[in-house]
Image (tube, rainbow, N blue to C red; front, side):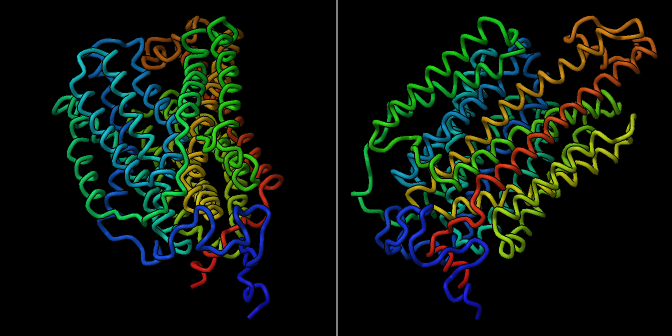
Length: 541
């Protein structure tokens, strides 16, 4: 046996002695703050627990895709076309700003009560959405749904790390990725069927039996190890409120900026300034709190900070394929909504496959190097989209999406598994929530930045147009492309080229985000993730 193996060291192994980046290193595992009792996850969870976790994840994963296809019916029934986008933005805001709060609460009170509360709140929100009488009420109730969805999304990911030893964790994470992939494909079809042959309210009512089943299964079958009451500190409710207010205001400014008002207008500047002020309040409150919602160690530890930054970049670059690829497929390639959805959704087919296989790579070259390979490939693939001919054939962008999903599966899962393996039980919820929070914020920032890039590109092309008959305002571009036969042939062709150029610039921006993530991994992340000794032993058993 090699020396590295005899000391428990591997690609991401650490010696049995102290490690600067490992909390509580050098303390016996049974006495370390945050270590789970030894009778914990080694035996693995029962099938009903795994099924309930996947069902809970499906509730969150299906939500937005199911609702999106029913928007015409919802608007036709309730009105409110000018604000319907808040059906998604309000939900996203609620999920994002509550992730850190639920993460800390799960570290304090345990995963089970937080998960039960989240499912219950999601169920109540779904029932209220089904009973909504106008668009304002529906948006408000979608926010209630999001408050429950935040607990589901973060806590389920944390439980996956609690219940599975390190060597088996890719299996459950691949299943979770499979749930998202299936939801991305099945969600639009399910939403369309319910809206067309039943009523849009059934989109929310169908959540009730699913959430009820998940609630019953978790309450009956999930058992957490008993923790010492002495390890519980006071709940930082002031910090939770400050984080919620700051995050909500910042995301509101990013969602509405450039849409409801110009970026350099008084509302945008005022909201961004107020967000900065609230951020200072958060820092002050959290420094004084005995058990802060957003503890400073999340950013002081190199591993967690690097993963947070890399996942923020992932959220940003994902805006290109998820938001702008369907627009490209319909406006430039002339595909229908179903064809455009298929071009985009092939990414979700390859993602779970490479995620499941990534363990065979990171066991040999380590978490950081595996993720670096994945994001480097993603940067090349994103850039390759800009080299496609015009007009491209549908299979060409579909191939790009298929390869991109494979690269990102190799990137994301090793980072999540790796960072969860560097902390004990009492810090895992906060760590997981910080990673998901940064990804969500990156997605919101990316949507704002890349939309601004697209608008600027199309506006410049319209200003310098050599052909007549083009729309004068950006708001009229989408309407013109819906009925291109009403435009002169030269104008329709020029408009498609303008949209294609805008999407190419979007993918260049996504390429830059992928390169930034690669630099973070190479320059900030440690070469070896400081995996806790007891978790390393689990992997080698």
